[in-house]
Every structure is written in C-alpha cells, then in structure tokens.
Length: 145
Image 1 (tube, rainbow, N blue to C red):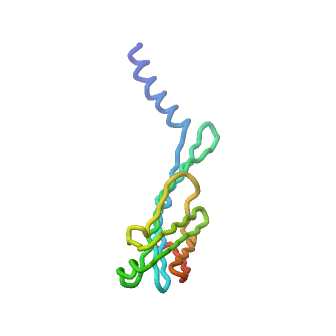
Image 2 (spheres, rainbow, N blue to C red):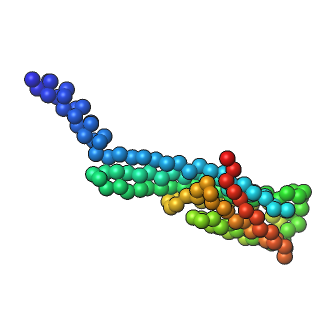
C-alpha cells in the first residue's frame, strides 16, 4: 500500500508544481540598419521578456543585450586623419555615446551594453549622429526583416 501511495504521490506533486507557476517568454531579437552619405550603422539587439504567473499574480523579468557598429563608407585609411570624433545613438529605450581622440581605428567604432529594461520593438527608429573634425551627419536605423 505504501509503495502505491509513493508512486501516485510523486506525479501529483509534480503536477501541482507545474500548474502553480507558468512562464511565457517573448524574444525581441532584431537588427536595425541605415546609412547616411558618409557613415552607415548596424544595431543588433538580443532581448527577452518573461511573464511569470504565480498564484494568479503576474510579474515580468526582462534582459537585453545590444551592440552598435558604425562604418565609414569611404577609404578606411581616411579614418587615421580624423583628429576628434563623437558618435551617439538614441532609441526609445536606450542611448549611448562615444568620444574618440584621433587617429580613429575601426575597432573604436563599436559600442554595446547589456542589462535589464525594455527592448526596442520592430517599429523603433534609432537616430545616429556622427561628428568628426567639424563635420556632422545624422541618419536613422530601421528594423530589417
């Protein structure tokens, strides 16, 4: 009799645990691209949001990671002549900036971060501004399917 109770008790306990906590995860893995006359950019985001239902109470947890890569459209050796550069981006849920004292190297044209918070959605527009040696250019990055 005890053996039968043990065999039946384990599935019942597992069923109770599974039904008491429900998790649904949504992913927001997007790539945004765009360009101006002199610069182009790619913003890649990997994010998720988990909705957790526990005892009829809903909570959420989110995480995201992004990186922005800026690319000079001209001859790459021209980057070495830039004395000072600043580039920024602004999106609905994130922003960043970087200032570089020349000469500029390709590896310096990247920035990224990770953490918690809201993710960019498909309809987001990311505004990028590049300023170098008294010149300036603005362009937008949009979701690319």
